Image 1 (tube, rainbow, N blue to C red):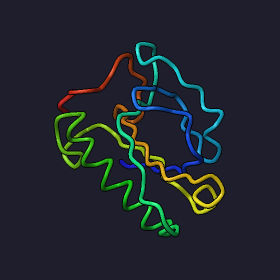
Image 2 (image 1 turned 90 degrees about the horizontal axis):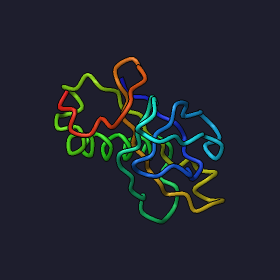
Image 3 (image 1 turned 180 degrees about the vertical axis):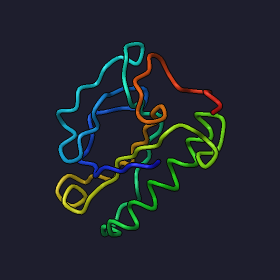
Image 4 (image 1 turned 45 degrees about the vertical axis):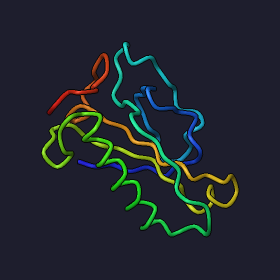
Length: 125
């Protein structure tokens, strides 16, 4: 299952863990240590190229492609064959124009968003 959320220049960094990704304002998402119980782990980030906003569809596709590729490196299997879930944030037109938001941020979660303790790096499933 892939979920998506619109990015608003997230204060979350790769290696951070969270429980609730929110779906609108990411500035108040509580970041928790990954060695404590959590649902989502941020595992990769990139910036989209500058220029005109490419549209929500293209931003979503860029996030899907990037995160799926990085998923294989981080987890050790292709996303399509994994039992784990993928979530990503990507820029929306408002944040792109108002705050120069170009960030794509990828998260992994256990199946059915079951809370975990520790990292899912190299889970191989």
